[in-house]
Length: 176
Image (cartoon, rainbow, N blue to C red; front, side, top):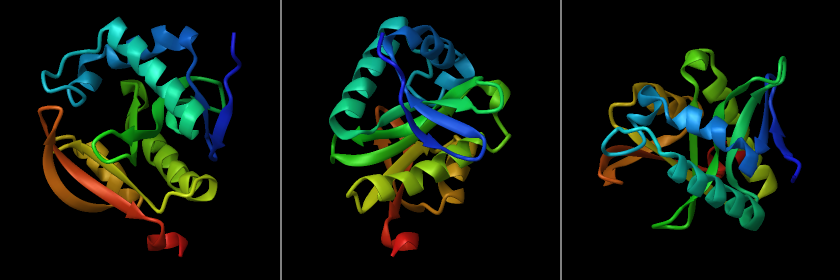
């Protein structure tokens, strides 16, 4: 068994990399229809196979680029809240921020806290000068998180057969 590495800590959260044995947690997260509705064009929960493939991809991104979606754990009690992190946006190669939390943790500021920590982390730990994010145009909560961490809306685009609003954050915006 490979030990999970803590990549980032915020006031209330610890973000660690995923391991193959975490597959049931990811299936539970993306198996929830309320969570899945903004992640696929059909709005269907992810299958176990899709979750397994995502874990493999995130492990590869973490190994090769020290990026990838990470497990979001509440420090206070070790509870898994969901996932957040950076992927590589395949069409452009840009770092892309993303997150998903279990419903019982919505509305408590965890997504914003994780995203803000990741925003600062990427400029401290990597040479990237910007990152992007996007959310389904109807996902008001996710769109609000992107705006709250200082991202600027750029364009609307259909991606994965979904109408999405894209955002960008440039290093110079806050980090000089």
